[in-house]
Amino acid sequence: MGEERRRMSRDRILDAAAQLLDSGVYSGLTVDALARSMHMSRSTLYKYFESKKDVVVELIDKACAATEQELEAAWGDIEASDSSDALEAVLGIYANHGGRLPRAVILEPERVPAKSRKRMAATRAVIAEACTTVVRRGATDGSFKFAQPELLATAVVASAEAAIAAGAGGTLVEDRAASVRALYPLFLPGALRV
Image 1 (cartoon, rainbow, N blue to C red):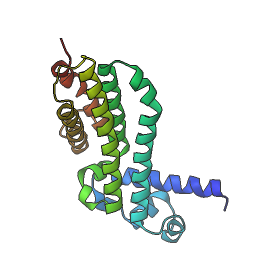
Image 2 (tube, rainbow, N blue to C red):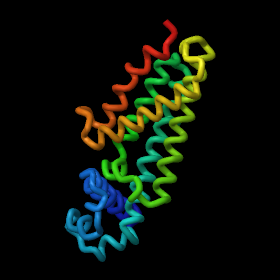
Image 3 (cartoon, rainbow, N blue to C red):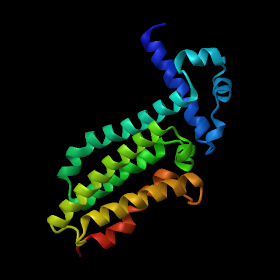
């Protein structure tokens, strides 16, 4: 089997696992359910992944890597934009991250493998650092009136986390990504110097 074909098969398995996990119930992802959804045998599935845990770990790693790559690719534009636009851009990237993670991963993080929880925490820390950098810059250049930029950045990231969870849980009308994007106009009046 060629490497390209193997990668495509692994990606298909990850997509199918993400769909099962997007039901919002972590226990919905079993090796049997995954194999059935792909019309493949368990033994074929095991040729690509040793366990359900390995599927989840790779799925979350790919989502986190995509978010970190998106932030890295946008960072030059973020640094060049004014502080309020930069904050909106960072929130937009975090919104995309919330949309990449399957609902069950968001709603039942305690069931996710420890390695994946650490990976998600690392990505959250990268977003928090970017947010803090933007808010500090805004406080320094006079764009933001908020005297404690770390507190504002912490509030923005914590609110984004809560919006992602509420969107995944269905308590908000918006989906999880739209829920995070809706935060920007809520924070902006309190942060901007008027």
